[in-house]
Image 1 (cartoon, rainbow, N blue to C red):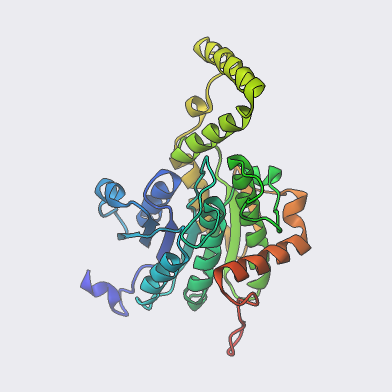
Image 2 (tube, rainbow, N blue to C red):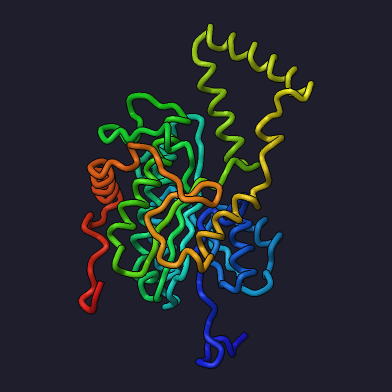
Length: 321
């Protein structure tokens, strides 16, 4: 392995993946390694994934523990990556959470908004110099079709007035798409591309969380709980009869979603493609609110203030864009 640092045998390209210890992220980590990348997989819990994968053929995987709900942790892990001095070729922003009850992070932020949006916003800010060090860095944001029902509450991003898990999740996924479009515009002349995607509905703990959140939404109030109980009973009968399969039953494995992510991260046909949302491997138009330029800028500035960075980033280098 020592010869890899020589000019004859240069280091492989480096990829960073958040949420890399399970679900889609774990398969993305494996796929990138098999494609010849060195991969840094960021996750809260990585021991099981490390044991499952070990060293994948064609690349080296390093699991780094990090709590993305903490801004200090995001900065710490970015500093660790930067200390290597290596350019980052691919950044996959995959990590996401669903919390049934309103939870606050150590920084005082609602957890879904913090992990699903603020963490990737800050991590990208911190790693962007490494992405720009190469010739054509790629940023892939794992969003969701749930952005279509999302709404950005600029006056109450932390859901202090009213909290519902799927509403908070939809806001965070809409924020992902708005972030993608804004960052792509700001990096248009740099060679770094930014795209996002809906990876599909796949079997995962995130799907379990979303299904539980939807059940929670149907069960507010005595009448609603009674209706929900009846609907569950009817749904159970339909599923047992084979007429209505559960999403968990028909959803494909997370490897299918990972394939979509890997295409955006590595496909040569997508060189230079930026500011695009993909679904089923095809560029798609997103919701009207995701294409609101004023909302996009307002969210960008609010996010910068929350994480403590200059909203004018990315800065233009003296030697060029």
